[in-house]
Length: 279
Image (tube, rainbow, N blue to C red; front, side, top):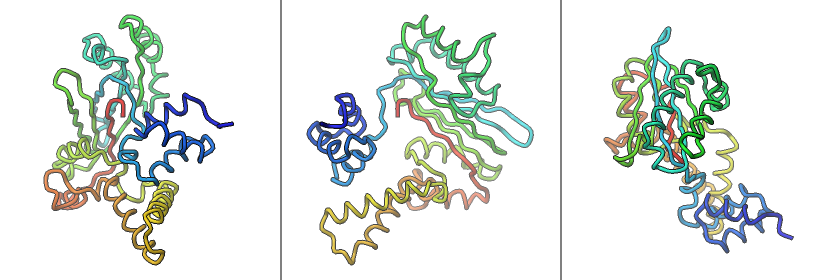
């Protein structure tokens, strides 16, 4: 008997964009393990799988604040979700987001769990959101929180639809010299969505998994055994260039990299955070 449910099939289809038959075969091969099934679909080369992983149908907004602290600045970025874009652009929802952001920033919360427990108007952020949700008539969720502290923190909020609040938010932490190019870098991050600042930040298991997928894909393509090491390293390097900020081609000048832009500023970028609603 198959070790998965109809809900698992639907979840994997939404996560990868693959067809029903391909999803069922992958789950059968993975004995119901969704994460293994995702890798199986990637190895088979189904178009768009990697790009669609982790997508959500959530609506809402992102919002940020920056405050001065001893020795520099601290930025707080939150994603507040609603069920529909109709509520996302409602003034009551936007006011709620601002109130929640202020409470989260004041509490110094760096993740959603700490943020939900933060105090606000004689209650907690969690209870405050639940009460507001009753008024708005929709489920409202504080999905993510990020906190960036550095000598200089720069924010960038981007509207993907002029009729909606910002859907993409970025914070960049840097020193003063790199602060001069930080807004351009933040705009780049918004557009190119790097996952890591530098290669050393990538967990070893992630690198190993990418290496394994690259090798199995190359074998599936019938590449010569002797050529596999070079092919795998080339594809792994492509993964680094796509997902590591300093290795990405700079949006404003693709002939150089973000790392070179930072280096030429004479400063350094120490951290960044990026949220896109529902992604």
